[in-house]
Image 1 (cartoon, helix red, strand yellow):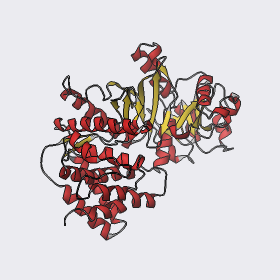
Image 2 (cartoon, one colour):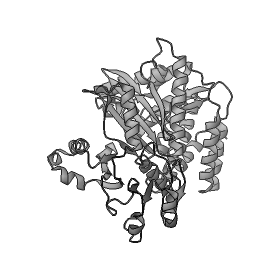
Image 3 (spheres, one colour):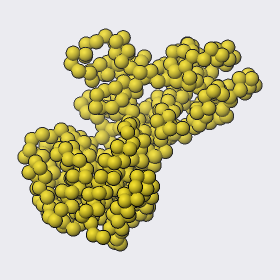
Image 4 (cartoon, helix red, strand yellow):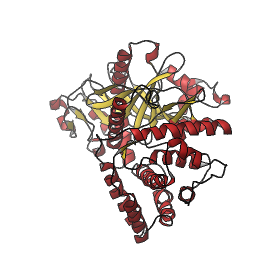
Amino acid sequence: MSEEQTRGRALTSWLLPAGLSGPIYIPDHASNLRDWNWDGPLVTDSKDIESAEIVGAILSNGRYPRLDPILQQLPEEAFILDLAPGHHSRSNSRTWGIFTVGSKGLHLVDLGDRKSLESCRRSLWKRFRFLPLFLIKRRVTPVATLQSSNQLATRLDAAIDRMQNHLGRSETASPGIPTFQDKGKLTIPFHDANRTTCFLKLPLTARTLSDLDNAHRVLDDMSSQLSGGHPLQKIIPKIHLRFEIDGRPGWLEQALPGTPLSKIKDRREQEHLLLLAAQILGSMKTLAAPAYPNEQSKSRNVFLMATADKTSNESARSLARAIEFLDTQGPLYVRKGDMSLSNVLVEDGRISGLIDWDESGSTRHPAVNLADLLFSWSWQNEHLPRADAIDLFLGEQPPTLPSGLSTSRLLVAAGIDFKQFTFGVVESCLDHAYHELKHGQIGVRRMRVQNLLIDPLKAIKSHIPN
């Protein structure tokens, strides 16, 4: 099964009824639906429906005429989750669909929820914000319909309800529209009257589950080390709650205030905020990472070597040299990872949040956090290809970027010398390639491998010693 199919199945699995157990019927032509983390057997032979006391059915291939008489054999109280909505009508149906919201991602919308549809309408361009709701519905791509004789709460409903109970069912517990992220995560904001207060995060793949588990372990360990005056204490997310619904895990996480650094356009303000960010990232050198065995680099190297081997012997040799260059002994430091400018929040001229710790872990090269930030800056604001940025950063002295930004001030602010920065640049390059390529994201994979790994390796090769 492809990763896209796995994500889709996990997404719709949250739409199954909560707290219900027993056999469910899956037609034998829908064999790709057989792993649903369901507490009970899966029945594929229609002859077993009556004797098995079926509690529900999952359908996937749209109109399938032979199914209609079979479905009539289901008990009246049984549910049907139809992944090709609209083909098998039954009472009390709820349909969900995906609504594309520009660069903000994909919203999972309950088509019977007027409030959600109105929120989607407000996210459109101005001239479309007055469209009637029946036209808004046409912009939604249906993904699943839950049909039952009585109103059943889904796993998603149960998760949201538990979070509302945890938050005290006050105004701060008003849930927003779930956003589906391509890497495999469903994120639901909770609001008060003025701002987002926290997020409910539901992993949809094993990798995303591992990443979220890792992030929260790192954040917990960091919090235990932070004293009252540490720059990180007030700008990392606090974890409110880890929970499970029918064996499926989720997290409630604090939302931090501020505007993404990527939206700041004033040049002087940008430089001021980058200096503050460099100081904060430099302060991470004081945090030890004893709880994380250094297995991440080994997994990364194995994955990247297998990828490079498929391209050419020269690429594999260049990668081996880069790995050997990074192989050093010493203490382990905390690694933030994913320093996209949208993950740095700013408010009132200060850094107010560092978010998205899914790629965090340990490193033996404390300059990698600053290198991550400068790489993100070079790609997002300077529009430099990755290989060109590496050529610039691995020169003989701290570079000045095309916009005139001097990196030497940032190195001083972070307390990092240029030799340390060189190690950080190579580590950052390999880590970024690993985290981007291990997820089956949309795009031509051959071009992604070329841009993320092969071309950067050529640039690294010309700068590191034999």
